[in-house]
Image 1 (tube, rainbow, N blue to C red):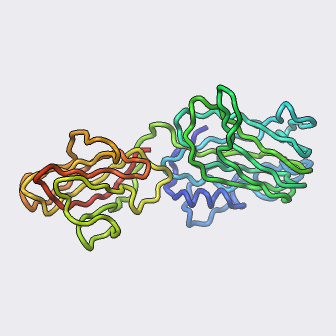
Image 2 (cartoon, one colour; image 1 turned 135 degrees about the vertical axis):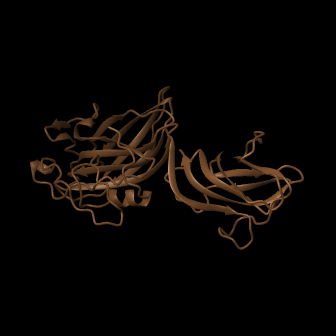
Image 3 (cartoon, rainbow, N blue to C red; image 1 turned 90 degrees about the vertical axis):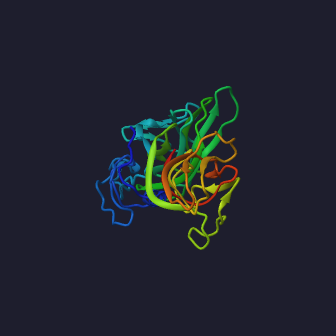
Length: 327
């Protein structure tokens, strides 16, 4: 089940929320709370998942949602003992590995070209040793698996849920299958309580942000540390993500583009760094010393950079305020 943008908080808050111990009933539960606010429990967790059915000590943290990130969850019964492992069982409380060398597996169906952003898992009964949780990819044509993300689960914490999280940056390959697996290398026991995967669907739409000045050519005006001076008869590389903290590198940025101290006439074109000029303009002016603003869009490269271009015999100062992005 997908859950969409319910609370505008940072990636850091999401990770911090996933690593806590007080909280809600499952990784799929939603609590639309501020990251700075105290997060009260909203449920007790599943009391049947402790060793021998003993009561669970803590519940799950709430899901704090990051704008632009979608979520899917896998519960107790998504995981099954691998067919090559002996002595593993599926109980009313979910799949269970009672011995060393056992592992549980769940298939993970993902849309091609979506971007995986984070993985969180809750595990109980790691009583005799540590365990390792993997998100794996397998080439359809055959070959060895690759770990897309790994979470180490420490030993101990009998009958409680241990929550681990990791940040991902992986684009789903259409020629690859995926699964999630947990492996117990030492004597002990393990059960996956729930898994949550964050992702950005391919072609996902617009996400607004607090307007942020990412570039200003005028000397002394923030942001500093960028190329200053009028742009004249040529091009300049501009970091469209300067000062921003986004959960993904976007494919494009929506901005307000303003020119000031202009020559008699001209235009600025914004376009993706590394691409040829598409023959378009993002803003135009028709008199000297004009101040003109316009809403503009530009694709950006993998580093968030675009090109600003003015034609021959034109020059201007300009500044850019980013107002949103397209993932």
